[in-house]
Image (cartoon, rainbow, N blue to C red; front, side):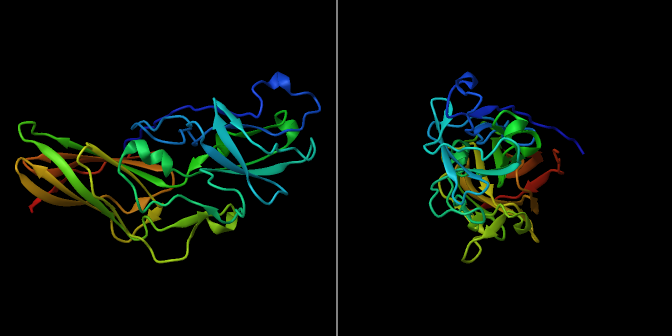
Length: 305
């Protein structure tokens, strides 16, 4: 087994003020330091190494112990700001802080039912992953541990909850025009709506009311050379099925491939498919924490449409 680790260091400060020197000895306001990913990685993905930064007006929600509703922190001009200042109750006791991204609203949101993004509609464009990515963090600390800073770092770093799939499509025969048309990912419950629960006994994600949604269809791939999507972390009884419709030369083809059964939370699966004489060949499958697993080549026989 070949193991490769992609490491992107991202250090972000959540400050309601810009400089530590502005805080007096008696200031009990909460300040936060955040890293994303255990290695760590960034909160969104715009390149295959997994790294970008938070964007202007991104909003993170955070629960403080003994407070029912989360407080929203908004990223503006390189700083995190909150309209409602969070205060430590005292300097010595440990308190639990729970945080998540993205935060759409705070009213009526509980620790056991945090809304998660809808994965049933995606473009397949890596640049759009940040709109669907869902992150959570948990930290138990006291004011005296780090001068009032709640540090979501190291073992307490924010983590990606969904599983990321990146399929790179390469045309090996440049003498023939190639273009993708549409694709479908099929697997039980891969895009079923969920809410997130910080209750340790819940296992994290809880299925929303309704039936499983097991197909993710993308109907316009004409400008893409790669396909990137998020799915729920799942262990499937039958492998995740990927079906692609494409044009090679002057003919239309349809081909399918099995992409595996286990898609863990926070995993980043990379698959390369090459078009050889009109057929799709899977040349490798890699999984990293978003541990490289290389599979044998699989030849996909494209069927003329």
